[in-house]
Structure formats: C-alpha cells, structure tokens
Length: 381
Figure 1 (cartoon, rainbow, N blue to C red):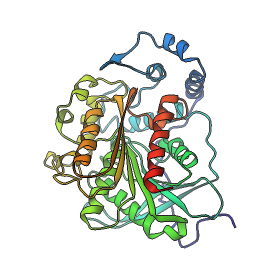
Figure 2: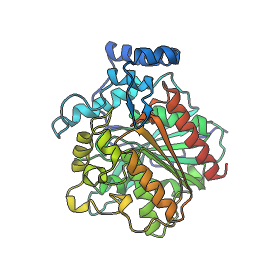
Figure 3: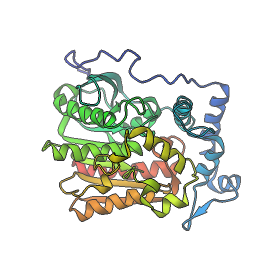
Figure 4: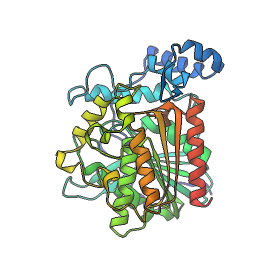
C-alpha cells in the first residue's frame, strides 16, 4: 500500500495557504534569466571563466565563474537599502532568485503541504505554521527524516524558496524531508521563529509513526539564518533535557549577532558581497532582535554560548566568499573543543548562499552531496 498521511495528522492549512504568498510570479524576463543561468551550467568551464572576466579573487581563491556570472543576473534582496518598507520587495527577490537557480525540475514521489500546530508562548499566540513533507518513495516504508529550516535573514524565505533544495536532499539522501515555514521577523521577532522550529521538531518526533519516519534517525539542517535556528534548536532541546536530532547540518550559518560579525576577517573582506552584504546582515539582525540586549543570548548567538557539550554530531559547510565564513568555522571549532564530533568544510570558490543553486551549479551540488554523505553516516544509514 502506498504511503499517505493519515487523518490523524493536522492538515488544516493556515488561512493564507501552506506557504506565505509574497505576490511574485515569473514573467517572460524571469523565465529568460532562469534559462540563461541553466544554460550557463552546460557551457564548458573554460568558456564560463572567459565570460565571467575579470576574475574575482579573495584570500587566494577565485570565485566560481558560474556564481560570478549569476551575480550579474541576480540581486537577492534588490537594489534599495533594506528597511521595513522595502522588505516586501526583498521577499519577492528571494523567491525570484531561487527560481532563477532552480534548474531542471527534480521529481519527488510524494510531496504534501501540511500544517503544524505551535503552542502559545510568552512571545506569540498559538497558531498553525505551514510545512512541506517530501518522501523519495511512495512505498509505505520507514525512512530517516531531515527537518529543514530555510534561510533568508529571519525575515525572508518560504517553503518555495528552498523547494529545490529539499527535493535534492530527499532524492540524493533517500530521506524524508520536512521543510518548516516558521514565522518571520519583523512581524514575528525573536524568539517566535525559534519557538516555531523547536515546536516543528517536537511535532515530527511525536508523529513519527504517522509520518513513517524513524524517530532515532532525525537530522536537523538549515542555511544562513536557518543555520542559526538549527544550532539554537539543538541548544534549546539539550538545555530542556529532551531528545534532540541525531545529526545537525549547518550551511553558511549565522552564529553570532555581534556587530561586524564579531570582528572577523571575512566580515570585513566581503562586507560588500558578493550576494550577501554587511548592510543586509545589519538590517535583518535588527529586525529579528527586539533589543540589542539579546545579542549575547546563546539561542541568538550560539557562538557565545558558554557550554557546547552534549550537542549532536555536526557537519558545518561554509563558503569562501561569504562574510559569515569565519564565524561558521569558529562555531565548528568550539563544538569540537567541547567534545562534539564535527566535520568542517570550507568550499573556497562559492558564495552565500549556495544550497539554492544545486540545480545549476556543480560546485554547489558537490558541497551539498558532501553534506548529505556526512548526514547519512551520522544517521547510520
């Protein structure tokens, strides 16, 4: 009998549907951009390097020509400085950028939008948040699960912006994937997005039988702000004495909310990009945090946590051309020092973010494939 979600799973979707609508749909120009980026992946690397001249070089590494070409086509958050007034446009840009780099459609046997109830907390009233379940097979077999938390600066990103990423994880990793549509800042500042992610992980464990997943083989992953929420969720569950994920994957994670990224070299070197800039980070940090007094909180800045022992084994993947590179590496080193098993990989030639680019970029695929291999080893599958 093929798998299907039973009626015991809550499927009453939020009023605005399974994923927040940002009011963007591709037009002819968008489709042309997507086709151009997809086609560039078929161009021999030497020719791509010529098209991307002059080469961008930093810290002894050359920016992948595909990403350099993409930088001419994609401006993730738009041309205007980020503010509460320009954020709606930035949210559209995030979805558009994911569309441009989506590449060929990745078929997955079972995909279903659903909702997850989250309880009332001191910060926000209870509600249902959207989620999307991917299973690489329709067979009614028990699978490992990856709970995925999308990036987007805590204030952008949707289920759709990371749909290709989740499809790739499901098919390449042969795991079920639960993508979490947590509430966004500034409408819902800290700790609401984190509360939503913790609630989603707990919900997945509690409904393992209905989801046909192995509760002992659940991984947690996220990119950028989602990497921060992944790390913070692991800390929250550990501190509560609860069973956490069996493995965590942090892609280009935000690990500190300190001004200037904690004074790291990469934050200075790549303050103007490519793609992510210091100004983007400053705006999103301010939108996420109701007060600067929260910067030192371990669930805001995991890098500043006094104790990192007892956390799940981890794979940390950073990008060479990323202002967040050094803080991601610092967090990996601190976990190692605390006795956590960690694999750390700097992908020298690629940018922040890269997990959305698996459809068009070989270097991004290689980086994600490496992480998937680490996850499968960590889950014992």
